[in-house]
Length: 139
Ligand code: CMP
Image 1 (cartoon, rainbow, N blue to C red):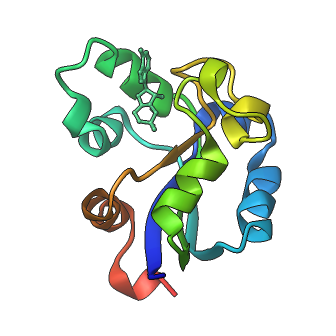
Image 2 (tube, rainbow, N blue to C red; image 1 turned 180 degrees about the horizontal axis):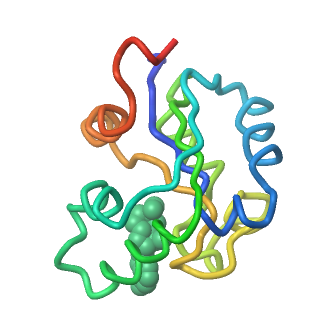
């Protein structure tokens, strides 16, 4: 299986609730490495740029408002099959549909405030990692 990198974000609802450590510990315990990490408070414009693929969606404004409402932790996770593994660990976007034990089942409160983000494909992982990190910052 290939070693991959994927972008992970601990969203403002989770940083507000002091869950950064628990979420990072879960990734590490599942065998994913933290290849890069930074705490940042996204501007509205940065959130809009990151989620530009969703700009026609009815929830785009709400999503960008929320993502710029407090600090996030942006990370690069690295490991075997990291993109799919991260999505399994996160669980379904809507916590009501997330499997038991997943981060969103444990920590998310709604589809909008869903604790974590993860890239959904190899192409998007590359784009999303480059949005936040220079190559020299990923180890
Ligand atoms: P994320 O994995 O960060 O990718 C896009 C985000 O849009 C998603 O998680 C949700 O937080 C958000 N989202 C998806 N559907 C809705 C919705 N119906 N209402 C509000 N936010 C949504």
